[in-house]
Each structure stands twice: as C-alpha cells, then as structure tokens.
Amino acid sequence: MFNLYVDDVKAAPSQWVLAKTFNETIAYLSTGNVNQISLDFDLGETKDGNDIVRYMVDNGIYPFRVILHTKNPIGFKSMKIILLRYGPYNVVSINILEKSSP
Image (cartoon, rainbow, N blue to C red; front, top):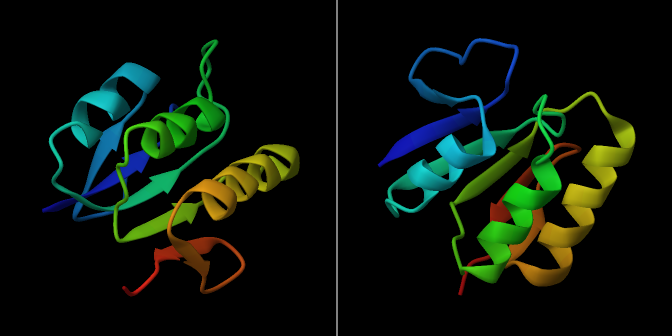
C-alpha cells in the first residue's frame, strides 16, 4: 500500500508518491494499492479533481483516507460533495475524509 499525492505544481511530502495528471492518478488508483490520496483540484489540464473523485466513485475505488489539499474553495466543496454523497466517507476534519467503518 502507498499514499498518493496529486498536484501539478507542489512536490509530494516524504513517503508519498506524486501524480501530476489525471491519467497518472488513474493509473495509480487502478493498482488497488492506494491507502491515502491527497487531492488538489486544479491540475493544469482539462481534467480536474472532480474528474478524479468521479472516477473513484464510478469504479468503487475507496482509499482509506481522502485529503483535499486544494486552495480552490469551489473545487474543495464540489469534490467533498461528490465523495460524501456517493462514497463511503465520513468527515473527520475540515479537509480529510475517511472511509466509514462497516
């Protein structure tokens, strides 16, 4: 299992794998080995954080923890709404969503 940091500008923190694009992110998520994912909204391309969380929900990919580190307030809100409405997440802080216990 590994932690995935999605951001087209910032470097990943220590112990995290960096994905800069939608396609890189999907490739990592498709392994089924992502424990935590930290998402930026603006990725500097036509796809954004909403496309990633929609992909996660549509494909039943639920990392244990989802962190929304974007500074885009509209992007933050829309990603959070999608994850809370369609994924098995509980809000555990202002910017961290954690998978619900069964």
